[in-house]
Length: 335
Image (tube, rainbow, N blue to C red; front, side, top):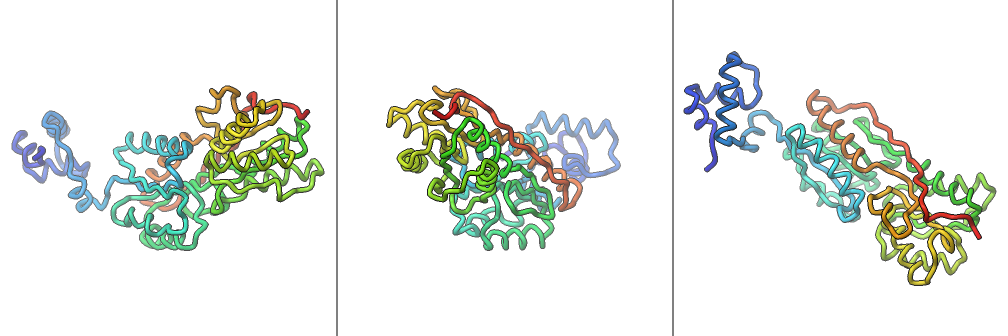
C-alpha cells in the first residue's frame, strides 16, 4: 500500500485531521512552520492523495472530460495536447472520449464521462445531434457543471466558447485561388455532421468573382486521405485546376491522387488545405493552408474551464481565433 495521511501524521507528530486539512488545501489554524513540515514530509514519503476519497470530501475530482471528434486526426491530437499541458500545470487530469465521427450514437460515448466523474467538460465539435445536446443540457447545465465549447461552428453555449472563424477561413482559401486565376475550383468538405461555415466562405468568394456555384464540384469527405483521393480524382476528371480541402489530411489525399496521375502540385493542380498541421510544411511540395492553431485552442479551452471551476461559475468570456493564410508552394497561377 502507498503512503497514507496517517503515515504522514505519525511522522510529524500531528493529528490526522490537521495533516488532512493541510494536504487538501483547506483553511485551518495551523502555523506556517507546521504546514511546511507536513508538505515536506509528504513529499519525502511520496504521498499521493486518493482521488476518490478527495472527491468525496471536496466534491472535486480534479478530472476534466474532453469529447474529441476523432483522435486519429492530428488536429484533435494537438488540441488534446494543449489542453493536457494546461490541465497538468493546474493539477488536473483529462478523461478523453473519442467519438470517431460516430455522432449517430453520441449518448453512449458521452455517458462514459459521467456527471459525477468530471468537474467540467470540453467539447471539440458542434453538437449537431439533438441527443448529445440533450445530454449536455441535462448533465452539465442542470447539474451546474461548467462547459467549454470549442465546436468552432454555429452553436454557442451560454458558458464559454472558443470561436474560430471558419467561414472567413473558407473565404480566404478560395479567394487565394481566385486571385491566382483559377475559376474552376473543386471543394472537398468534411463529414455530414460537420458545420458548413467553411463552405459558405467558399461560396462567398466565388460570388464576389461572379462565378456561379457548381454543386457538382463539391464532394463530401470524411477528413481522411483515402476518400479525399477518390474525390480528387473525380474533380480532376471534371476539369478543376485547383482544390480546396477542408483539412490538411484530405489535402494529402489530393497529393496522392496527383502522384498517381503524374501531376505536379502547384503547376498542374493547385491545392489549399486547412489546419496547418506540422507535417504540411515538410511535404515534398509544402502545402498552402489555413492556419487553425489547434494547440493554442486546446490551451485556451482548458484555461477557460479551470477558471470557471475555480470561481464556481458556468459563464466565461468567449475567446476568438482568426484564420491566417499560409502560402507555400502547393498553389500557383492557373495555366
